[in-house]
Amino acid sequence: MKLTIDDSAAIPVFQQIIDQIHFAISAGELESNEKLPSIRTVASDLGIAPNTVAKAYRQLEFRGLIRAQDRSGFIVVSGDSDNRYTARGVSADKTEVHDAVDQLEQGLFPGAFCKITEDYLSGDPAKCNVIHADGAGTKSIVAYLWYKETGDAGVFRGIAQDSIVMNLDDLLCVGVDGRILISNTINRNALNCPGEVIAELINGTESFLQSMRDQGVSLYSGGGETADVGDLTGTLVVDSCAVAIMDKRSVITNEISGELVIVGLSSTGQATYEERANSGMGSNGLTSARHDMLCNHYAQQYPEAFDSNVDSSLVYCGPYRLSDPLPRSEFNVGEAILSPTRSYAPVIYRMRETFGEAIKGVVHCSGGGQTKCLRFGRDVHFIKDNLFDVPPLFAAIQEASGTSWQEMYKVFNMGHRMEVYLPPGLAQEAIDIAAWFGIDAQIIGRTEPATSNHLTLTDASGSQHRY
Image (cartoon, rainbow, N blue to C red; front, top):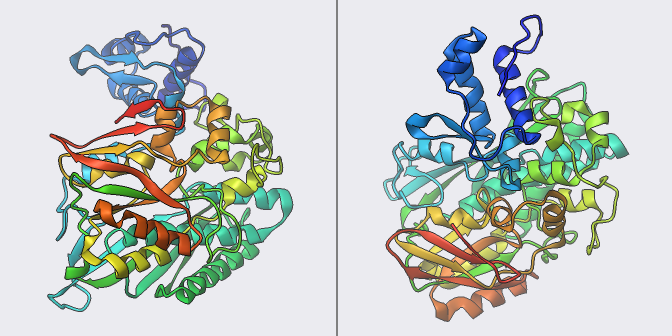
């Protein structure tokens, strides 16, 4: 491998190294498992500091293109489609985040879905506090593209809902069923996202909060912040923070064990409290969805809508425009990707009223998709062998990208975004509760005792995947 450095170029030296190695891997000049020159060797050959080479190698490692081999340096990782997610600067399972967070104090109930603390807000020893932050992620960029193409700022109402639901439905997993206070933060490039965008986000927030209150979910606005940060984003980022006080005795601790059934709640269809049918998209995996589905027209017309550091072969490399029909679906591509994230709050509230402490766990299949469950319980073999059929949107993403099914189930919810862990005798009643709200549900699997947490998943074709 020959690397050259152009000292007169505006591109930083470490980025020049990244670009050349990335190209060599993409072009097949560097093959899978081929060993790279050591950091010291590259630094000596180019006459640069070893730290500069190390920085480039770290970025390539994060992209999933190379891997450290203990003391033997770095090797090229297989160039299969599973690396596409990482190569775009995204971590499917956030391993590095969890590695850091897991070193911190875990709160009152270490196994719970969210961190739970003493009731610092009111000082009641019988109560506890839950605070949670999340957002719509890069789904807001798809809304931005829709807005630029159609002039319809109303699309951002769905983004407001996405941001709130990603907090609300995580809180459901610890049993929050009282008052919840929501605060929003909107970071925007004011040149590209003018006042009408902000107005729709604010109005969308209030409308969704009211719709949840109509369903008995006590969700209220605590205000928020809009920041003009054009140097940080070319479009906008929509985040929320939720806080609640609850009784300690009401916490779902997610002490998942063997001999439970897993009831999955479908992410598609139309719930009784939804205004339109849902594609099942949610707010995870949008980086892959937009780049693998949408065509290069969007890269050419809207350079502010992607990171220029990402390899151009991975940027808006799909076959579709937003207005194109989605195969085997009633949606067009834009409608499917932008389908607002469903909240399961009314369903989980009813299940809590019905089953009480018999609910042993609730898992929101968000970051990590169908592998999210692995972070909960202890010494559990999760068996998912009766999953929903793959929704048309996820099938189209897989077809367009060539991503392995093993990776698809790790990135996307693939048909159900909420799962409830119950004794077998309660499964049918749980399914009936979901049906009352117009949501399909079914036993998607079970748990068995094991020596460590692991998952065996059977996909729609009958192939097994192990995690």
